[in-house]
Length: 163
Image (cartoon, rainbow, N blue to C red; front, side, top):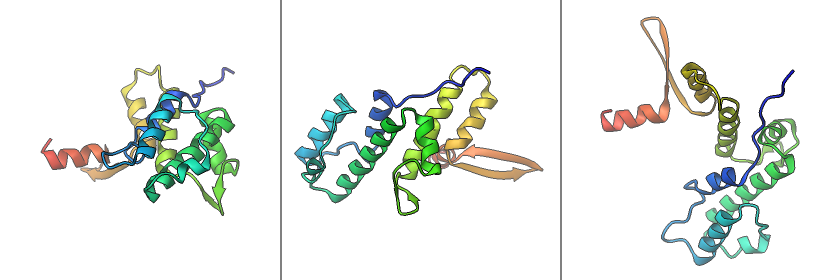
């Protein structure tokens, strides 16, 4: 039986996590935050000493970087996105108490990367749409006995802009 393709925690994936608004610097960001961000964008696997995080002025920013680094280090320890994802729910990844110590957003991004890797060669729009439903919030309704599903973010945008 052939094995399924396996996504690996590569630099581009880590850069995509860093580019999220929760981590990307804003004009008000302190110099230490800007420097850390630039260094990690250049070398996502760069070791970051805990005392370096203490130089970040904003407590929320410190926490966001701690979460990113916990996720990054867990990915690297697991070796693949799939192993890390499974470890989150089987107790093999970092946890705090009984809860998973990775934000739901990171889990959604893991699922998206895994599913996109699995469907990289598909040409079937229905398969791609079904896969989207695994990691994107949906609005589900019924109309004339039909079940309809729509991407919540897209539907909200259409509502706000009139399409």
